[in-house]
Image 1: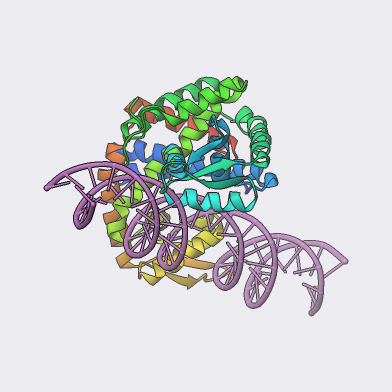
Image 2: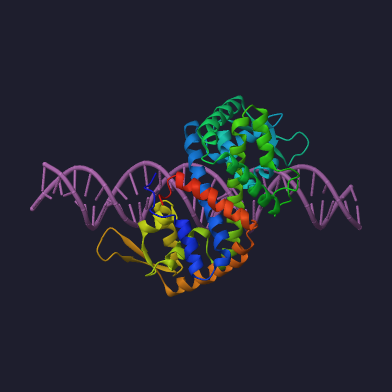
Length: 168
Length: 168
DNA sequence: GCAATATACTAGGACATCCAAGGGTTTGGA
DNA sequence: TCCAAACCCTTGGATGTCCTAGTATATTGC
């Protein structure tokens, strides 16, 4: 990790915004920028934990999703929708997971357009081990106070719903 | 935008975590996943606004940073530190901004290792216009309630400090 | 029943990020 | 003084994301 900066660059950006007469949007700008930076920090931590397993976060998410599916299999378009990423990103992840022997593609029994992604036994085992590592190394030490976790879930949940992620 | 899902996929993931006996980390997992997804939504909005200007968020950030520097110029390593991205990412962004005539590289007056990035007049003008667009189209309609913005700034500020971003 | 439309996946390309490695410049200690 | 270590930037490679376009299969409407 690099040496900490003497000052918070996002707080400085907020001051710059205010100095330029954009006080009305300075706070949301700072909040949004902070979300971007926080995501970057968290992603780096997660990738660091997953690396020994030969996984990236994108691949792990897919593996974890499959491991929670009753049959251990999902159509690609379903995975794309649930992970909320572009279909080509799923194609990419499946290519690599399949190359590693963690999933296999199989044809959908009734719809010829659809491809099912299915966990292999190896994939299921790795998903378990990777999840255990993330639980203990990242989620159990998130760095957020308990009540702040609740606040985040509430605030970001509302945001995501308003953004059209889900209806609920 | 795709059709909203009937259920919040992150809330579902949280339930899955709890069902598997990981209740102690289910909430932080949900919060962290929500941050990842929120970042994705915000980035897409921002990129959508910047696209007509021929900018990406990475390039815009650099342009904005330079526009706030007294002299309109910064050493690349300084920009890398302030934007908190890898030096090669700055190299990449500068290459493209320079290709678009928005910045120029110039040698540091006293340190032969260092390269200064300098805004051109064109770059300064575009930064202003892009900022105005982001202010009115994204930050002024962030989708966060005012008190939630304050909560986010507080929670994520603490997190970033603890993660070693700054000392303050 | 068949053509038009919709849906599912993949190929290719643009961009961003990081890491590892290499070449040039400065600094600092022997 | 001089060479090793530190520092700065760039190149090349791996990965991920998205978009556009193309192919194959289903569904719909006349």
